[in-house]
Length: 275
Ligand SMILES: O=C(O)c1cc(=O)[nH]c(=O)n1[C@@H]1O[C@H](COP(=O)(O)O)[C@@H](O)[C@H]1O
Image (tube, rainbow, N blue to C red):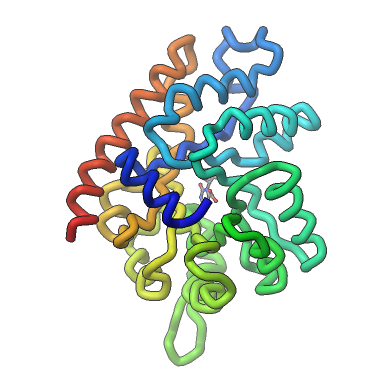
């Protein structure tokens, strides 16, 4: 999917919501446990209930890998159940020496037809570039993550005269590896105070923003600080949507949560894109 197609979808749906599909078999509603593939059935109903309100879905691969071969089957069926015009993110946080990254790229872009994959920058340019060989396929590089451990490395100050944080050096270098048509960055919603520093280095790129909802980040704050002329944000929520209820009404309650976020996004888009 191209950046223009993504922006068109955002304008059409008045939403920049990404719904996380981190489906934990231990958290499934009781009544789904008799289904042939309970994880897929859960995802199918979540997708049906939210597809008109969001522009992206992000299955976190760990939740599927943890189930063994059946997990990969559920993941592939889930991917096929997502309407074609919705952006798909394999949240796999991969990255390795070049020839291994090439195989990760094949796994997620060819064997499975994801639009994008999250990649860790730690191994450098040659570990990321193999994911950048196909038009319309995206790398979403971890820049400033939402968790407490982001302090350990990402927030280290470099003694380079500019006193930049390490995450800023990651942005500065990696922005030369691909255009904003193939690269996005992960910036946690819990890191709002640093978003202006991010935007100074990557004004045009889309940011994938996890950390609202269960992790406490503010949708309004991150939107005011991070939005650009093409919106430039995909804000993810997972647990607050998919586990809004553990009962037979789980899809209905997921829709209500997604709708509340979409309505807030609609108001923010109207206000901020016009500026
Ligand atoms: O790459 C990610 O998506 C990610 C990066 C990050 O910095 N923080 C973060 O929470 N995530 C992912 O975003 C999702 C957040 O889920 P909730 O906290 O339930 O909304 C999980 O799948 C995390 O793995």
